[in-house]
Length: 362
Image 1 (cartoon, rainbow, N blue to C red):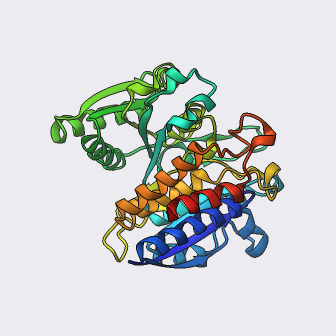
Image 2 (spheres, helix red, strand yellow):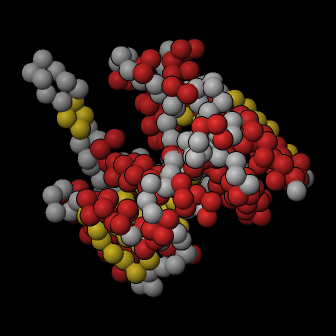
Image 3 (spheres, rainbow, N blue to C red):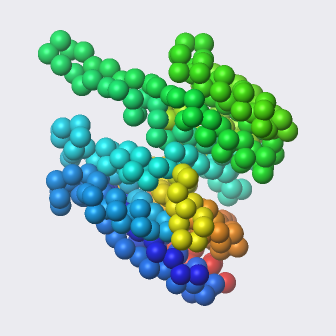
């Protein structure tokens, strides 16, 4: 296969983890006989510095023309004082909306070597394997808002429409049907009108179109507790934009580090291979305090590249090979600083990547 992949390194540790993921994708191409055409474009703070805006039009157009997009991270304190529309995070939100990627898949798997890296007891996290399906282009991050004015008032609006909830519910239900057939929909229906709409629509779609999928509704505060109390009980978790953002950061405690969790953002658009033209990124931030020191954990970016192979290129064997190479690296005792038992035992970003590439070659 020949594929065109756009790389958006972004800010902080973004360039380091994207460089690692690219090395792994090159190793996949060499092993399986594929060719990749890479193009790199600015986003976030790097784009603000270079072009004065967090998502230059040329970056968005390049992403729309690609088979898939792999992104590092955006943001950092150096841009916090900018006007809201110029902040790096606005570039990421605009990219998601511009690509129409309304569904964010965040798999949470506690691989065996990570069980004792979690702050939870190993028996609590053993066997954890669920996917959070986060609605990505609606909700409070995209609703009407008002910046602070002279009266000291600001507000954001959590708004959803029936079509928005229907499409994300169907995607999550399709995924649950392919997995273990259990879907938990998370909302705050006891307080929020938007959540009551969410619950009604999800219930109707599942009852009418997916009777074989077991549906359970949970309030977001109860879900936050149960993610740590009984995480192995979950299969597919469906939730709104802000709730999904918060819950998946919490879920990182199960694996011991945000640096291990990948994501895939998908929509209706298809690439030239007939697969979703997805946006793939680790869920971690830009971590500017460790940028350039070789301390970044590239596993989430590498596992995001595996999701890219699976969802946008239809290369399941290649995706599994990447995941097994990451697993083999952990099994060999190579952990970056965020997971290492002692600082002196930590593998650098480059050393971890070399181990993954070597495992792929084997």
